[in-house]
Image 1 (tube, one colour):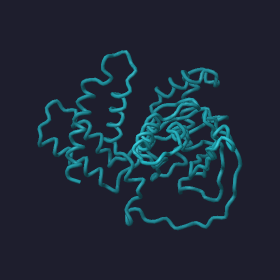
Image 2: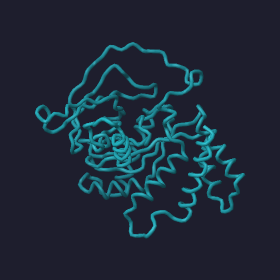
Image 3: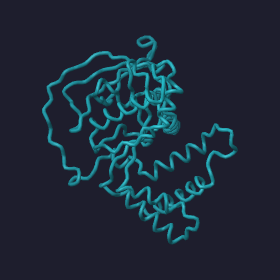
Length: 296
């Protein structure tokens, strides 16, 4: 079964707060919806799966009659939950230099291991026109450092759902096509290509096409049936793991990204966005990152 992590209470609160006209009238209604989403994902998701090849590892799963529910998630990898043990070790009050070196070595072992388990956590739920801000920031930073102009906005990249729940099936995005010329496409609609995901992997016999406009509205466009032969799956333990696996952040990387984002994008009333414990964790993670990078 897929390693799916859900903060049920947080999701229930956000559903009731952000979808007042959706027919969800109580926490019980919201819980039923979350459990339904969870069941469909777990029944269709392979153990070795990534929703995105983006370094942020954030993904959107769209659900609802008009795909109005956009569940935001993030994937990471960990080796037998060793990353969580590293977190606890980094929070010890007194941490000598030698101990920090040992922790860095443990982190490096996870980083280079081909045997990590993949975890997916559903973090929150948004409306259709909200985007993944981290994804937008990463894209804009990359494009700003290039010599040529890329006429695609970060918001467009960050609005795209990575997966759809249709009935009791999970469909994953496998491509996108669009025309940016106003004469041809005044609404800047793009065509997203989805294929059904099963426990055995992607069913390539059919593609479903959806349009997505710049307001985030998603609409079914059509389908295409294909005759596809089944290709043998490579033994991942013999051949190693794919690039998308190695790009995926570890548990510690994901934790660090959350801390940095909270520090840099604070909108609360408190003077400091992070607790003293969080700041300590942030500084110590940066130290072990530095140690590992020096020995790559």
